[in-house]
Length: 146
Image 1: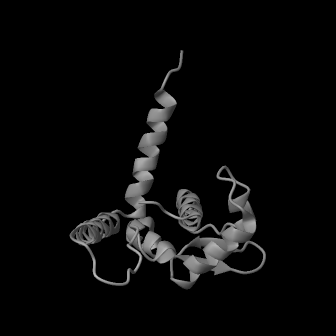
Image 2: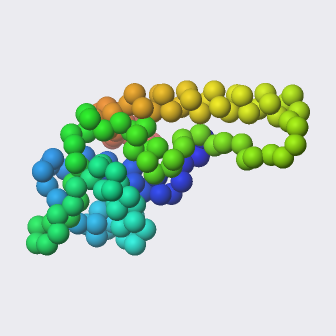
Image 3: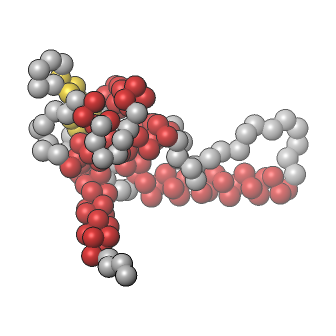
């Protein structure tokens, strides 16, 4: 399974927004110049796609920017990824002619994998992901290097 840069940047931006005060608007340039170093022009397109599909709200003008449209507990990571990726797992390319038994087996396994990944990601909320990020960050800070 491989996710696109679009999904990577979208997820990074949404995680940054989730870490902030829930009602605070953040400008795209502040998201792009933060720790994640997201490319500004491309990020704007990603944020626009997320806004069109009700993941983000926008306010224009002074004090404006982007914020999450709902609480992180009500945002499914799978829905977010699906919106940006349109499909989580890779799919077979259309093939002309009759498929061999091996190709059929590969196609069936790939479809099962796609359904399983879609189901698993749909069950994870942004709030749960944020808790996992906090745990992983805490563990990383507790590591000692010699």
